[in-house]
Length: 342
Image (cartoon, rainbow, N blue to C red):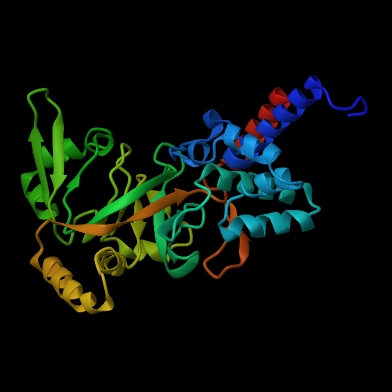
């Protein structure tokens, strides 16, 4: 700087700008350290680095700062965390805030006008419109370890009423359900299970629709390679538990029938006059007891996230238990990444 303008100074400034763009837009945690993270972030394609650099240097004074500020997530929680960081003096609290600010950068800058969001540590689902929570529901999420719920961003394409459940092999074989179904037909029929043995010797088990179905009376059809979705459950007494990390990975939703009806209406109504007809149709489907896929003309994004510090459903900034032990790993990975970059 003291030597005045030069090619070397220009190169150093450009490299610093590029690194800062990447940190603010994409986060400072390398992908390999984001445990069970399967979200595709469109921001690098939507806001390409070279385009941002060109905009910054070609603009008026102050445009560099404006470009960088414009990369921040627009969700109100990011702003709240930033305000909390400015006031925090405790090192542990600062690390917690910084980690969760970075998690917001991993997601799309804007989540959309309307969406469903599950914060796994909070164990709740929020139906959100214009960043305002319309309704919240308790959830049951995956047990820590092998069946922890992954972090996803998918689209709800339909509501499935009276679903069947194709039991995963981790349960059919790993927990002995297949042998039990084939060995005890009377019990299997009472529980609604149908088992078949393929030519390859593999046992396949499908639970039919009914009051005992493990998916309850509905599931949200959000196709993904991990076979994770939101669904009902016949074991509704579990929602009264404080710790609800109890599932095999999918997210069970309290008052799931209300969620299903709400999604069916919001996903298909053109005006409020359509609501009675949709309600009547869905009620008939539910009462019929047959597997029915009810498509949504307006598909909803759904985000399965992991924030250990966030606004609770009442809007208060709150810390949540790190049920999968991810904060320390994230902190270590970020520290190593920063050292490597420097």
